[in-house]
Length: 535
Image (cartoon, rainbow, N blue to C red; front, top):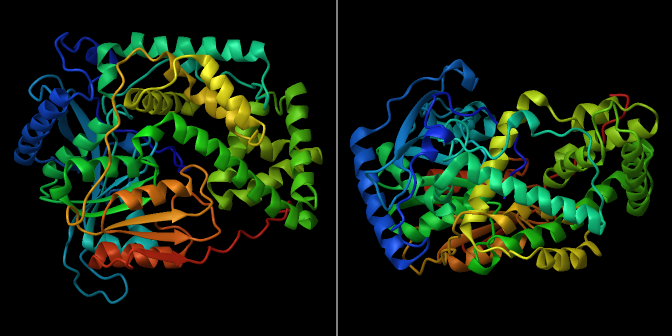
């Protein structure tokens, strides 16, 4: 699942390109993905790669200017096998960033013992964590940055880490586009054809290497990174999709876990990965969209969009219909508006700006809406890469319905009660119906009593991107895990956010290993204050 964090700069060093990687085809005798023989050979291959990485380490140097990282952050690469069943075959390099532990308490100035590396995956699939070490200067992270080296990385396929591409980035942004909440049969046929063409493009541009971009390989890469950092056990913070990588890691390598935080957890049940998880997200986004509209209605005196959630929805529909007839600034149509408004469902700190943009547009000023919603051509390559990795991983990870009639039936039914995001979610994932690479069988994530040290799950009850039932399911599957719930709140990604109670549990766990029993709860963080259109 995607986080709502801004995409950050990709890796700085030129590594394996899609063209060169495509020349290395998997042998015809390769074991079937997810089979017992494949799993055994991949486990052996991971051990070989990790031992090699422990010997080689990572040569950290000053980051290149492309990274736009401060001098306190250093960069390097770690070598991993493209195919873990063949650890001595084709190798790819993942870019890594690090800021060293300061060793001093930010309040008292006293020396703080170093606790090793804290590795972050921010989610996606397809997001880079290269900017994570920069958080060491943020107040809520300073105590952690005193004790830990903060380590980020670009997962396989992302940025310069053996990057994937499925279409020409210059054609990625198509300009103003429609976004019907109840599409016609003709629209469905056109979108299905477009999805099939996208899937073919992924195969044509990447070749047989496409099959190796999976969540299981992301978890194996994480173990090689652990070894390259010189750590015998991993301390890990995964957000959103990063929690699924962490859950797979905990199942595959339980003895290698030191501390592990699952922030906004994906439901790891094999039958939910990924088709049913995405249906659940569409339903949850409808609830979160209702939260936004209710907040705007409470501030009708500021925005003038309606004094009930229904009336605010009517105002939004007016904006959407006008944009369908005449895109704002020639750049923003209904699809761009919807993409912008989705951010309001991820993080409520977007609410004031999004409400102001709608209000200003209806009063004759399209500027704020264009500024927030237009697609940036300079970001097209990064956005295309992110989407390519996102789909490669999710499509490879599990079986998907291959008959569009199944998607149509399920989504038509769901859109009757959840029109806001259902069909956009379908178009995002529909290439998986036509995916050319073999499908994995999802791993049964599980850890019995004593298999893992205590772990920490953070979740908001009304999170839409990773609905709360995912946190409950992960908590149930990992014995000894503690679940901290932010009640009556829905922001996605809680670690280091606006809730001091959640952050206190996070800090106590990472610094001292303390968890609050099996379950704890925190009151919701304050709702955002409305921003006057004048400001």
